[in-house]
Image 1 (cartoon, rainbow, N blue to C red):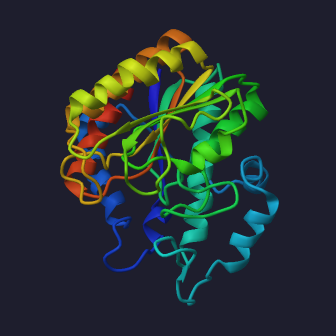
Image 2 (image 1 turned 90 degrees about the vertical axis):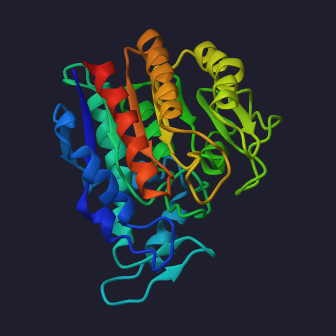
Length: 316
């Protein structure tokens, strides 16, 4: 079995403008690391532009939301627009957004297909998705890439229990919003609090399917690991997922400019390995990881490197 890396050049055409932290250089930094010979075992594919992508998106978002975003999208030669103070659409954003969704769907297809040689996958995409609520774009995010992937796994493959684990430093309010009333979708998140977007308290539990483990500014890998050992991992194991999806944000790194946690690459390696171990024991190793945040380019690249290395080692 091998690990799939799925990405596309169009992700660099999502132009957020000068000074925006969620910028195309994030893709270039990751490209440079994953081009190293040590990652030649990866199976590489381009993120598709699916003909039925709208049908997939409206499993997680209302049809009216999709159509509203489509109706305001800039086309070639038009100026960028702001959906909120930091969520921008340029002429390249629509294709990038649809291909980010397509990456998750394609990865789920290959990981869930028993005849496939793909054991797990990493989707190197932008714009990210975990802040996009069912009816609201926000926090750099247009569509909830990972929630759409979860619904696709259920609709096409009959996955009865799908889990999303989110270690981005910002709480994934969008994923939580979409999963809130669905007992067969599990959302577990470690994140700094208080911090944007302001959600993610321990008491936010949905219908018993939401597990939030907030951390405090200045917390290191020790508190991060305790949050998983004491809260998230026991609930994840009890949920016994058929598929694990990872919202892989690397902005909890000590070098990241947008937050105040003190994680290092070894902490991202640790959480990757423990989640892959749960997947091995509960769902045949089926994991799809999707990039979320991470805004210090060197820290992002190195952290993605150790995360993808863990995926490769688990699949081989």
